[in-house]
Image 1 (cartoon, rainbow, N blue to C red):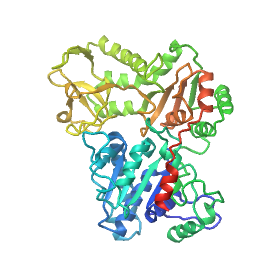
Image 2: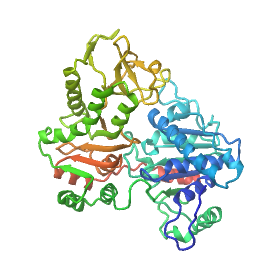
Image 3: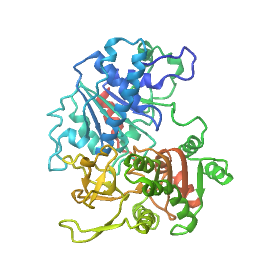
Image 4: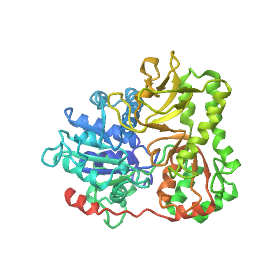
Length: 490
């Protein structure tokens, strides 16, 4: 599964192989990596190894939100298809080829723990541990302190826990930047490195560092190779400067125009200028054109919708999500009205009329297990054969799987998202809109999270002062959990 292991002196070890080897041999492991560093592939190979060693191994997948859990399972399924093709062409043992069966479901952490009607009570806890042997939690940077403690306490002492996330990404809204704190300082002992070398064949000299154990010893590993961004690409360079807190160099490069795939508009007005609005709306042209050309081609509509997303730091205000959604909604709706497509529909039990039109983009705000839709799911509103509004989702494009808009109890427009809501998502191009005034939510982690959602290009609408202030403002939210986990895993 991990071919071409480096020999002694090689400066580029296979971090995925090391992560899997560490996780399979430790009771508690944190794997941190940015977008494109291979977290999903590492998890898949960890599952294969665990099942190969023990075919009866009870594996559970979880994530903080329903959307993240759904994405986790979807990404693993796709990775399994890829690795399945690779292993079929290789000389790997037949036993490993038979272990590609994945867990059938990924849970939210609350659902995994058996949340009751009381928010602070769970069915599973220290006295009633979860029935599992290996727990893998994705998007762990979104876990808050209280939930992390409850989760760890509910895992039996004989089981292994693996938390995956991105230490530089936004922390949970609630108390504690738990994942960032726990994974801040990867430190592997000499004994651990020797064990990993025996397992993987990777020389310890290629990754062993003489750093003081100020973090968790032998529990943390960083995936350091990026398979998505070329080294020194525009986005890779921008992310690097953000993480270094080098606002001066970053702004100088933006001003010089040296970036080909990053466009910055220094907009100091309270609301967006005309040019900023044009910059923000221009990438929507492909989506609007597809609506005009063939709105029945839902696959193409979702494809164009996934290519571009507007991200905002705040919900309210002239540069917040609600204002940006209204701006785009009016632009798209204007095109539809010009063609006679906009409709007004009174929903049963709803006192107000709501305006909808074919192509309206909405996001579900509440988990509904009966409908199979989760907080964060994005859908497109269309008219059914009776002319009533129904919502299609990218994993359910057949007409009989469309859901009546009136059945969705809580949703909102989603042409624009907050950066928090966009965590875990990827888009070809993003446009980041920052407030033109000082805001406590705008910091280095928010910038990093937003920019790293983009695969190809980035537009930034922000004043120079806002950018400088955000990059210079680190997030400091210490929970004290590091010492508690160290005590549990020692």
